[in-house]
Length: 102
Image (cartoon, rainbow, N blue to C red; front, top):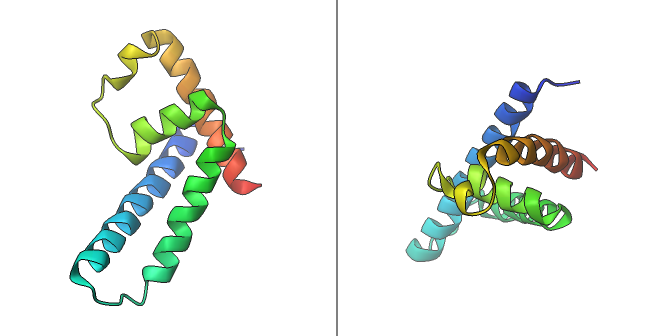
């Protein structure tokens, strides 16, 4: 079983790859050149987006804002108290990885 820190590191890696795939897809759309990796980028983005849809609303909110979009570090203040956020984040990381692996 992975530690929480290892789980966060894994989600950060997944999110970084997600942002890169989105960027390559965007560049390919603007430039109009076919990218041989475009299909794999589309599939990767689809899998991550679909996984997020399978998660609970709190998990969706945390994964998108904390990892995928890299929102303002204080983004959660409008939604959770600080202590509640850390609990929800811990649960969100575990749920996201579980949904991804199913």
